[in-house]
Image (cartoon, rainbow, N blue to C red; front, side, top):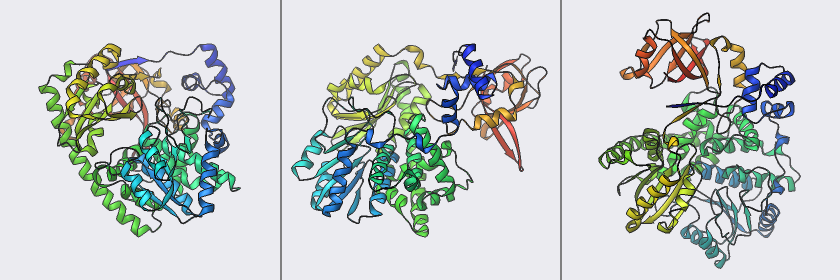
Length: 562
């Protein structure tokens, strides 16, 4: 692991903010590292308010979108709410359809089949719309690159509103409105909304035209927070406000479907991390293993007994997904070793029988293991489909653009993308991708990095510090859990391996003159000899709370030791 200590801000800036807020230097330093430099910014960070949300009509084409929806309702048109099969897409469809259905009955939903139709707007989906006399389709979390499909819809007499957050291509589709703040000429102040976030801005605009306020649509924020967590978008600015209030809804008054999922976890209060690792995978499992419509059905259900039944079915999908994920990951690791892929700048693997629903998860696992930009391919109809994952600091979307002559289709973000190509292009693409990455990546990015916010002494680790750090939540990209480094540590003699195969490390650490604090290091069992040795050692960690027999105590969540 590569330990990188973030530059310490100028002491003058730290002193100024510390005095303004009445906090110590460490807290001021952590805030400045997050771009917070004055009292007002700190107040907005620690106390997000709904009035910090931007006017939805600042988004390009928002007036057009609202007018077209109101026209459809006035004319009694059939509306189809269409979305991708992942968490962002299914939550978006649940949000938009349930909002419209509150006051208007002619609304249906459509999630494309991951295997028969693939990502985004499909010709099959448009045919479904035409067959059901749909004249307005609202596409969520997809559509920005659906040039041919939206042209086809127009020929069928179907207007399309696109609500997307992916990067536009050089050509835009002929939609009646395109809501995507990443458009070059869109002046919307915040550019990092997820697909469900864009959908929420649309219902916010619709609500305001009907004389409603943000308080009237707060109940939809459980879906938005779930999508923000699952899509790994920055938890800054508007996303922070949406996630903050969305978590409140999840914990205090979630929709029936989310409550049914939570009840299976036995969790009393969920953090954003719980949403990422507990709620999101289960919603995702529907589209991965069966069909995304199962997730929409759960998230829009109003009868709790029925929702429990849906949640139980989705739990079975998730169990199956985990089993396949583990099996395919092992096969992919063997393929990398046999092909000596670990000696390259990239990992590209393919098996025509791998389940398309889990190749994204497998790509993430391989990236964690070999820390290379990674693609996992499988057969999809008469083409090959792949999920791509990247390492911190490297834009895999740009790398795929450099190989676009080999590709049929691609789209995504800096760290995750999807693509299709013809089977005969696979070897050419593989060579081109390796060439592009090897020529553009900084070699140090191929070594996993732990970014350390600050060096501290064990005397600074106090319950008060923990109380303040908890107010930094919700955590996520650009506002990660603070990571600290302490030097010259010793163990009290308590250190031991725990868990299956003693692969985890439990210890009690101190510096000369400080009180010992318990620590847990997951997958750090191999560091036991370092901790039990005579020499002092250094550690990087975050702060956590350990609850045992009703007693809560501070705990170091160890990330690495040397």
